[in-house]
Image (cartoon, rainbow, N blue to C red; front, side, top):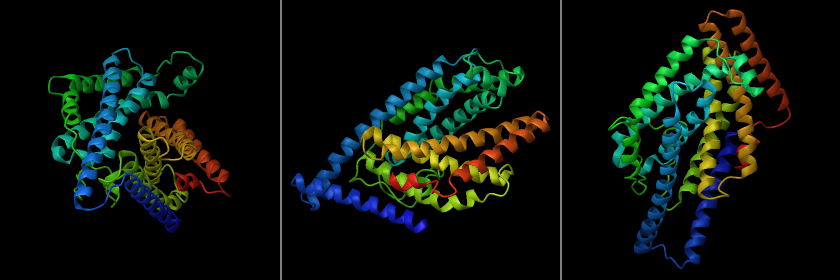
Length: 342
């Protein structure tokens, strides 16, 4: 599997290189000293403009959604906000090499977005871990939450983070400062301790100044796909899915696959055919199924916190059963075949 994934990765690199060389020949560009400089400058200008536009759009969406979050907002209503916040963070991660000149500020913003993601996620989890709330929502009724104290406490933490976001010289203004100062791509092998291992921080490849944003995103997605292939057999053979070790391995694998989906969708937002749409959707569907299993594990953890051992056991057993069923479905097929078609 590892050799096959590596072969796919090398094919993508060759394809991108061939395409760029063909474009250069068509435009009559000679890859000599001055020609390379001119092309690099032109591509960097276009690159920076595209990244800047995507960043501004994502941030504006978060600003609006977070502004609407109030003391009346319920956990199930926080799902979209969390996803929108992740989009801003993803742009920081995928295009981190456009911010190397502001690495300290990038690190600070990345930390603050992680904190927001966590508190909003903890609040949203109150919905996922409450079967009655999930049932009510499915029936188009307003969910009622069983633990009002926990709801108030977690919502208070989100509101506190919101205040930090909008305050003068706060997170919002920091992001505006960073996004207004996006620089041409820097390709030095410079890493920040904040670079996520699910993005450039986890691979040896670097983005290229001779590739556009979509192509560099594709390079990243393919490199992460190689890692997903390597760890997949170990995930399938997890002995105890609900043990701390098993849960971490399962969680990280799902997160890597989900990240690949997000990177490909971001790439396609720049260039429609960067990743094959059908392959993206199939992989996304698998991520959802893995997410359903992980939600049951999280539900079990919540029940354990509340000393409801019987319900926790039921949730864990359901998670294990779903995972076995999923593996059985793919017993004669490759669960990750869509990775090879991206």
